[in-house]
Image (cartoon, one colour):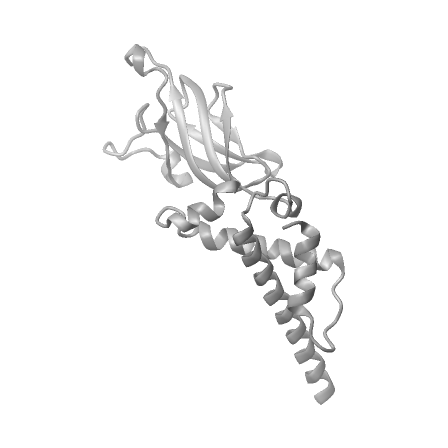
Length: 206
């Protein structure tokens, strides 16, 4: 389904007598809201529901950072982080394990600053990370242990554009779910109309 076809389908679903006309930017705004709702709906059960993983599979991408430092600047299109793995080099590790990644655990900023619990301290095999807003409002991930880092691999769900969702080529969201998004957008448009009509009726009653 192309973006033009999605807009046309919206016209059909919303077409009722005396309904106001929606411009293309307005339709796109409702479609974008519907995409956001769609992603949030399936992400909430992503880890326990195969259908959710199928619905969002085209939005899953990765970022490999090999700078060696203990921070990652979050991509602008990131909506949800799925996992972070860290590859360390240290002399005590066996050579054949040098290429292995350790899955990092997310902790709160307070836990990150005060790793006091001896049973839950970070290590090369059990790294931790937290989110930090740096100067200028740019969000980053900070990692512990912060030394001997070779690579960081972040998997995340990206925010798609409408052109990436609705295209005849290789859409990020499959057609089955495209229809669901358009249905949600149509319901939002109809709710907006009904809300506006209610406000007008209330004003007239006064």
